Image (cartoon, rainbow, N blue to C red; front, side, top):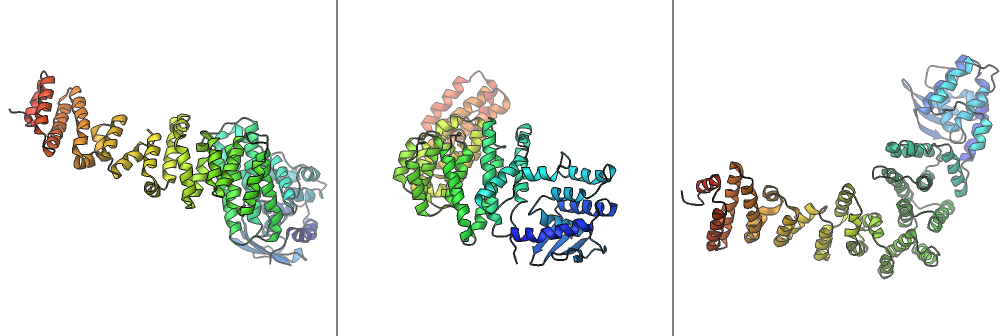
Length: 547
């Protein structure tokens, strides 16, 4: 049977008092129990915690696994499968897991230690242990900790204030001092936030959504205020937060949401309004969060229509965020006529923000919306790619090509696919090369090879064999160039290579019944390079001319 936080708190307060009275904070044996219990708790070795009306059961992974039963009404009658007959470290660790849900374990320890009149060496062991596990400033007064930390409360507003109190305890400057560990720091902060999650299973995903949304907004705002520019690797921390949000929404969607969630959902909608009305600079992360919530969570058509009406009356219509938010709503409603007007106001920003839309709409098989975006992206693609360095452009084009449903697009509009791949050269070369061979556009394929200047040996594996077989006359310019380049290297091996290409040219002329042109070509080459005796000799060996 599940138990709510307030009920748990009511049960733990008398239990906590009983334990503090039982354990003498000046006795080495008691200090040993508390310090070892704290260590087990900090190492997350307590698992399978089940809270019932009168008792708690749990498993503790010590040197050997043990089973613990805590009695709320009579704590000193609690049981543990370990050999110790009195209150043990395993029971202590389990108690700390419970207490951590309603209060601060370090506060409990401070209160317990205050019972002792002894100082100095007697308290140093526990203090050192606490320092080792995150309390770098040593033990602080319980009143100080209580003043700086709020309780989670039972409303969305309380949760948000609670998160603010948690964030104050985090050293966000680490994000600047150690930018190469940015994603690790964000993951660690998220884990600490999640330790405060409610016990009830149905509330955990909602808490996870709130916590990761809060961190996304505030970390983005912090970095923006500090004018910290992120590279692609550092941006992965936002990918992590969005992944956590998506996981939370998936868990929420498994069952119908209870009515008690309504104020929380309304609060999240309010946050998206604040984002669009904010005077802060528009960022990609803000747009990701806004679009994420409206795509996954706020699915009612009436909600989306109301949001469109609100945006259309907004005074912030010149901001990029406003344009993205309004376009997002039109795309969700599949009102592509109105979406066209918004797109006209966006330049290369449309490509910048397109990753979310293309992924969601094409993966979700809403192809017409995706097609609308691709058509409008086409004209902006060259300018957008021109803004990127080589690495970023390569990464973007590879991703972009992978996300497109090429088979569907080929049936819908083959010309659009051709123009799109052409607009992304040279980064789309391999995809465009394969596309031209697949559609047997051999003339365009030859033009592409001239543009890229690959060697014939490289072109053999990229489609030259197909061209030679299907449209041999189109391969002639490639072999002409190959012959001249090989001869100009002026060594035996290159002369042999030139002869090999000349034989290909002779074969093509024979296939096309133009042997007279072969005679003209051969005479031209032999005359031009008549002073290269080694080359003339290789031509005789290759039986291109008489010995």
